[in-house]
Image (cartoon, rainbow, N blue to C red):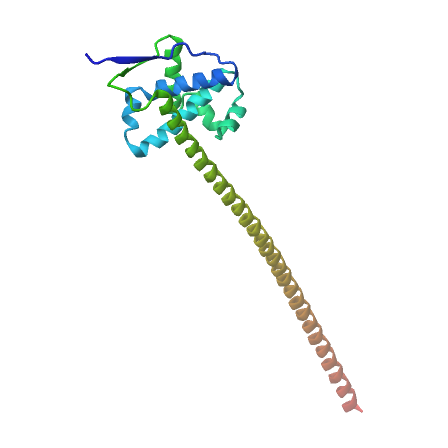
Amino acid sequence: MEEEIVIDLTNVPLKPIGKKEISQLEAALMIGTLYRPEVLELIKDPIERATWIDSLAIAAAAFARYKAGTPIPEIAEELGRSETTIRSHLGQKTKAGKLVAETYEKIRRGELKIPLPLIGAPKISTEEELRALKGEVEALKERNRALEEEVGELKREIENLRGQLSAKEAEITDLRQRLENADKEKERVLKKCSEVLEGVKRVKSIISEALSVVEGLTTSY
């Protein structure tokens, strides 16, 4: 019969006080969730593995801190994630958050004991596995920070372009106003010219009539 060792994770503090107890609960949640059969199946895929480990690590860290009474904004800042992401994990709206919450319930009921087959000397201890996983998480966090900086730079560039666009729109509005004013002035000038021409015509008519009268008088004499 194959021997096995059992990792008992039922004694970790459910309401941690201080960083040490928070780390203990975080590690228990992480390990307990990672060794679930469905999770082990998921992380076999190298592509899925990094994503799942990061999500589970953030969910476990958030859950442990939340149980310690840490405010969500502080958790988000410490873990380098948005408050929306943290709330989604804690509210079990994510698969990782749901799995971690179920692991917590197992700890609370005293059911979280992980049997591991003992085949000779283990190649890597649980503690070493956890360190390796934390290393991967830190690498992912660093990548996330780099992406956030890149996003921030793009946002600043977009804001700059928006400012330029607003300036151009203001120029276009000004040109349109000037064009409208020029059209109105042109209409006013044309109207004035028309009035002047009408006046000239009337004057010419009066002069013509006057000349006719003068000629008539001259002929009479």
